[in-house]
Image (cartoon, rainbow, N blue to C red; front, side):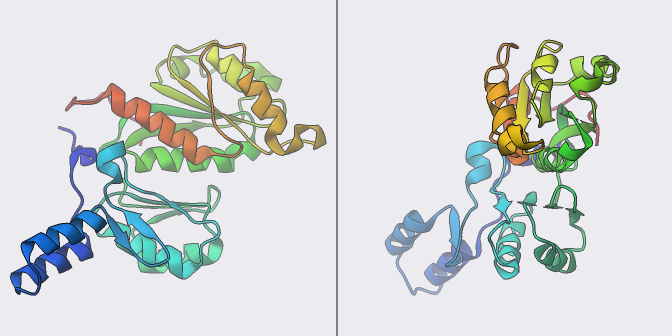
Length: 270
C-alpha cells in the first residue's frame, strides 16, 4: 500500500494553534476567531514571507522555496516553518552559505551542490517513472534540479546523461527505458534538437527544458528555446530557460493525474 502524502492535511501552523488557545482561554469569541482564521487561514506570515500551507491540498504538492535572492536566515526560517507540516521541503537555486546553514539545522536533508537543491522529508513511496534526459554533461545542473523536484513531488525519477543528437546511438540505446516512462523531461542547450527526437520515439508526455549552454549564437538559451517551441514532434511542452524546477512540477502533475485514486503503483526508480 502506498502512503499518499498528497492527500494528507498538514500539521496545524503555529498561528492556528495560537487562535485556538485564545478561544479556550476566553480571550476572543468564536466569531472573532473564525474571522481571524478566515483572513489568515492556509498561510503563516513571517513578515518577509507568507508560507502557503494549503498548497499541497490544492495542487498535489506543497510550497517549495526559491532560494536565489534570499538571505541564509530567511531561507532557514522558511524551511523551519514548512518542516512543521512533515511534508517534503525543497529549496532550489541554493547558495553555498544557505546550504551550509540548512545542513547544520536539518542533518537529515539532502544537499545537491550540482543542482543547487536541498531536499528534506522526501516521500517514502514514489509513484510513476519519470526520465530526465540531458543532451550533454553541462546540462546536468538543470537536470538535477528537475530530478530533485520530482522526488519532492513523490515521483520516481532517473537521470540519463549525455545522450544528445551529436551521437544518436547513445539515445537509441535507451529506447526501451524511454518507452517505459510515464513522462520524459529533456534538457538541452546549443540548438535544442533533442526534445524533437525524443518526442518522435515515445508515447508519453515530453517536457523540454532549454538551457543557457552554448556558444554566442545560442543567445543564453534563446536559440534552444525557440527551437523547442518550433518542434516538429507533436505535443512537446516547453519550459522556460534553465527551469528544471518547472519541468519537475509539470511532470509530477502528469504522474499525480495518472495515479489519482490508485493505492498500488508499478515499481519506480529511487
